[in-house]
Length: 576
Ligand SMILES: Cc1cc2nc3c(=O)[nH]c(=O)nc-3n(C[C@H](O)[C@H](O)[C@H](O)COP(=O)(O)OP(=O)(O)OC[C@H]3O[C@@H](n4cnc5c(N)ncnc54)[C@H](O)[C@@H]3O)c2cc1C
Image 1 (tube, rainbow, N blue to C red):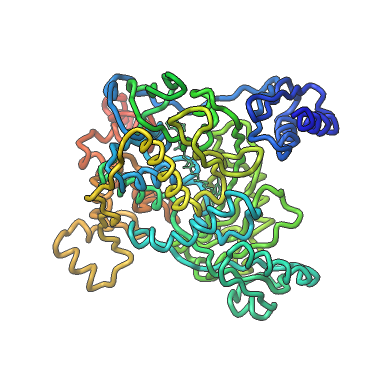
Image 2 (cartoon, protein in one colour):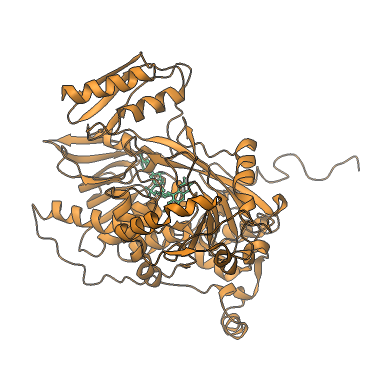
């Protein structure tokens, strides 16, 4: 033990971080003291990683930096008090939703608690939607094995849940001819890692596959198992199928602490009362370390790494078939380097970037990030111009200092399972993570009781029409039955009123403008909702029985209208 501690101390000293005091706690390393910048905090964390500890707990203070903490829903009350479940999952991202659906295969009472007003509000809607092939993650890491398994499982998940998966493949291009010397090694690595179908392409073969690829390329590597999905639709699909199979979803519900007894969790404190559960699953994304701390099991720290992504207009979608990227050389070693990837809806995405951020829910974008994206990735497709970008967004990755997923039952709490540190490729890995977390949960429950399969489990999600994907005769047939499908509300994405109504009345109802977007993409086109938002607002008000002024963009309080014109004292200008 002393040897490992010595190694950490040496590493910190080398960085000149003299105000940092490392100590051992259980099998982890804890950093205490002070550093003068956020970069110092990050550097200290990495200096302590990889020294043989189970995890790095970074409790360093940075004077002048105050964490804002997590968003807390405004709702208060006791309507969930004394609710009792076999399993409670904390976090409605892709991991929590996939785990919830997995657990409904069993005859269990399952609940998912999510502090936001909808599922897929954090990292799970703020990403590239790539189903990575599994080449980038280091051999032997959980990231690697879950990525490989998850990638393969996506084909069946897409069929069962009815979301679109395009196996578009990816081309990692070489900028310098001498990179080709490394290709035999890359091929060997791919084979060893279980990455299927890798092909080495000459410069001409890259052009044949991607005629608009940069002229700077000198050949590359093609990975056919790479896919793309709409990540928010995947998350919603998992959540809907979980609810259809009997899971309870409680939105606007934040976990604030645990009641512990005899080394186990006996109660989950929420803003809506104390909930009881046989097993608790921690799938809380950037706040997973805080949840672990509630059970005195914080053996790791999460730090946020922001990624900004630019969206290219659909008009340019046909200029590229698969993902285009450059090798990671010279790029921050903790990312895959980003690139230019298609989406299932026909846009292209540029990015992401990778910046360590102090605030974990900081989704702001900046001019510097945008300029970086343009300079680094736009040229990969020579048809693209800066004016083709329609908007930007950002997400925050939940990183541990060991840079790997934590997917395991707690060593110290008898009924807690962690699915933490799920940064990229977490989306690609989700089906496999859910399968394992489900199995771990059932194993814990089986220590005290028999767990039977759910004979009524239906893996097939209930699907509703998607007009844009249908032929004209098929559309005609549907419109004849229900004319609401004939009224196009979002012209950019060709979304009808019927589809919006379906989303509002689905198993996980869309009750805000953004929630409708996440299900049917209304407002996600070139005009970014400029045209359809008022119509959307009216439909939401009518279908949910709310007044228009009560309709929100997203979180409670984000009402789109400030009030009725007369009530605000506006209306007709008397001077005119
Ligand atoms: C810019 C970017 C690009 C990426 N690109 C890809 C990609 O192309 N492919 C890929 O495989 N992966 C990608 N990823 C990673 C992927 O997005 C994540 O691995 C995945 O979404 C993690 O899902 P999650 O469910 O763990 O976390 P989240 O989606 O963040 O969900 C966690 C949820 O927990 C909730 N929560 C937190 N605390 C509480 C509490 N106390 N009570 C109740 N609820 C709580 C949060 O509100 C949140 O909704 C990318 C990530 C980023 C940021």
